[in-house]
Amino acid sequence: MNRLDAMELFIRVVETGSFTAAARLLQLPRASATTRVQRLEERLGVKLLHRTTRRVSVTAEGALYYEECSRILRELHELESELTRSTATPQGKLRIDVSSATGPLLAPRLPSFFKRYPGITIALGSTDHAVDLLAEGIDCVIRGGDLHDETLAARKLGDIPVVTLASPGYLRRHGTPSSPDVLDGHIFVNFFSSKTGRTFEVDFERDGKKVTRLPAQQVAANDSQTWIALAVAGLGLVQTPASPNVRKLVEDGKLKRVLAQWTFEPLPIFVLYPQTRRLPARVRVFIDWVVEVYRDEARLADAFVARGVKA
Image (cartoon, rainbow, N blue to C red; front, top):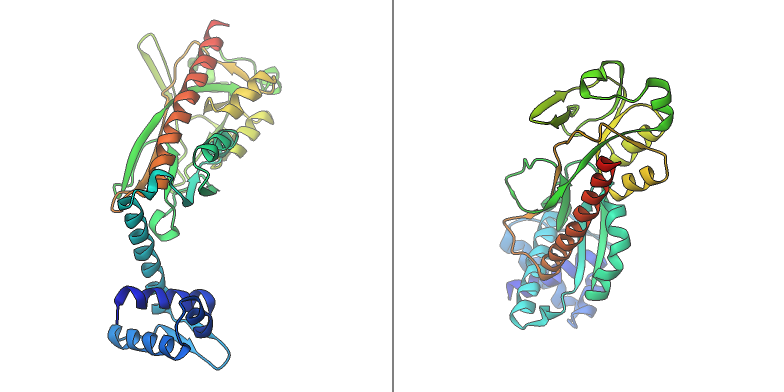
């Protein structure tokens, strides 16, 4: 029995829930399909499927075997495609996870990606917490900040400048701080890690003087969109990357720059992907494209910061 054929048959039985349907898809007699799966179970020494007169369902061992067989056959197909040069036009489904601030940055630019690669489809998840790429079947993630997972390969996309902001209402009530030394009477909307619960500090630098603080807060968030919304609501100062959403809020007058003459540690942005896997063409071209996106984004953010300093 050909092992790859047996794996493909097993996958089709699981996906259709039927030996008859799987046999029809692979143009096999139903009896042959049943026999081949039985021999596969005998060789592995485990029961892969529960069989009743009405339905077929997968066992716990079968579910694990299904996931691994699917991965092996998918990667084999991708390798064969590359070897036959069919990857000149990459195709397939791409699963990506990005922060809640990154989704709106990518969305208006994605039409240009699909125009370039019409054979690729994207499932775009948006979270601000760590994800397990292999367990969740995610091809790559885009995250900001320091890297901690050594099992992942990383490519730096750029550094996004950081600004300190507050709503006009907050500044009317509390005044506009002239330097970090007078922040004691102010509160921040802080950001905390969903993984560790640690609240992030804020830092300021000017003329060689660096100030780092863990500011007082009334509320903190672990989602970047909520974080900014709380600042717009007047609940405190916020130190944040100059994302497109943040720049728009400043332009609309909903947030104002403060301490613009001070510089802040920029936020490094990375795309991360499993280093134990060969990089499929669809992932490789997406990473190359997103490098271009962040090159343009860094230029726009730098120009925004420079205008605030000159104002």
